[in-house]
Amino acid sequence: MTERDRKRGGVPTPSPGSAPSKETPPRRPFLSEECQNFIMIHAAFEDQRQPGSHARRHIDQCPACRQYFIRTEWERKKEEELLSSPDVEALVAKYARRFQLPFWQRRKVQVAAGIVVVLVVLVFLGLLAANSLKATGASRTPVVSLLGVFGVGVDAWFGGSGSPTASATSVTPALDRRIARELTDLDRRYAEGGTPAIAKVFAEGSLLDVQLVTEWIHVRQHTSLLPLLVNALTDPRLQVRGASLFSLHKMPPLAVKTYQAALDAAAATESDPSLAIALQNFANRIRHAK
Image (cartoon, rainbow, N blue to C red; front, side, top):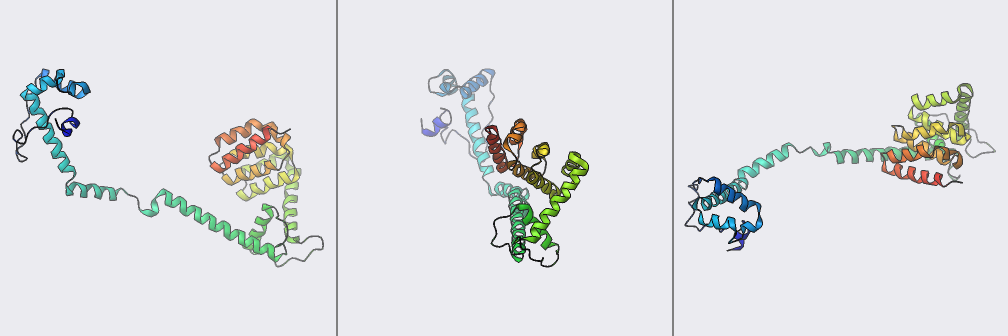
């Protein structure tokens, strides 16, 4: 028995003289119920494919069973010839091209393009803010808050007024005035409407409005507004969740510890991988705060 015979299940390959030519298909044998049972046993059990086994003894002596394997081998070869033919390969390639998305419609390409656009915009805004700060004399000062830098950048983008008058007490008078004005406006809103007024900003305000409020909460250390920051950790907007976590870092740890369960839940459900890690680390730090 050859190696090929063993791969075919132990049934010897018919000799060239026993099989009809390719032009004439081998006849399809009539299999009795007994033959069908032995063929199924032969296919199901490896030991029944060995010479001398119960099923092999019947198959080796039965002309109908041997003719069945001849017909099966012929059909297998014809199928291989069909699948490997140039016409079928061309048809498969045609349908593969038809269902292949254009390069610019592929998800990975779109995501990469979106990231590139965001990075370009961020770099542009950063350079714009840096140039504006440099014009006010802040190029060699310590790092100021993200809110102030962003405010100056927006002011430069929308055409703010000319160079401010220099102050003897600060090298960034325009920046100081802008931050003070924003904080004062939120102080007045909080004094007039209390917590509901600030909560309304989270619910109805723009992304910039919410980011300003999160900055104001930690600058003023309003611990009574901690529930708003904690609830914002589940906001649909990624920027809001990040700004809220940044402000929570600036709040007293023992005051934040009251909301430990909410922090753990927010970390477990966060969809952004980087923010999820930051949330989990913050929750662990608060858990061990004393």
